[in-house]
Length: 290
Image 1 (cartoon, rainbow, N blue to C red):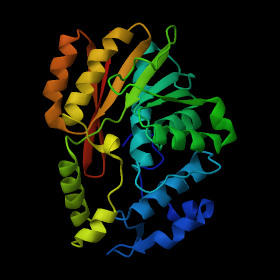
Image 2: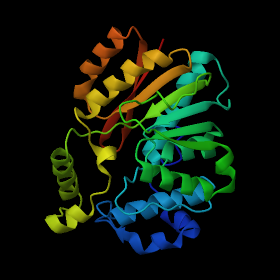
Image 3: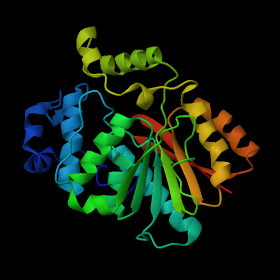
């Protein structure tokens, strides 16, 4: 993880519980006798992430209805830390520069907007095509007084577009971020979720595992999966190259990189890859500009 990520080491659960007492009932002991949480439980993961928001990001409250994607705070913060460093080096800006960012597919959780605003003091815009998710994200922004002056959530009414109808005519952004839908179908998403949960605690109860599966369809899968979604991002970004300094996206699957690089070369974009890792999970950020 990034050397400045405050979650590089084990979670200080006792500290987090002081800010969010509900987390306490989800703390268990691992085989080594160390305190942890059951990561196969969506409720436990949600309360862990909520405790981080309350303890470390000055949120006054945070509510995420059951069924919506629960993104891990440490990994999402890692993305933004690496992005900040890249922008600082590329544009010769101080690392505490106040930037303006756009999150494509911000979801009900609005996590990149919240982290960008609260940790980096950036101005953030979140774009989302799911009207219900927009409503939930806006509600969370309004729960913390300082956030509503730094974050704007916009509804993408036409799912055929990503940037169009979101980026204003004369609007300028320093960067964009995106956590694209990973899977190509619901079947693939469910199959992978069951595999991961079976690895956690050796859970073999299919009914219990299915209850732990969180995320709406548009958050988890799309036609063509991650590769096609990022290719769409690259194609449409060409029309906004004068309004965005650096575009970026998370790439979870290394097998998709050749397709993505081919599209970047076709668009005549300059690009850079940044590797990331959290535990055994490896991913990378692709950044491109014109």
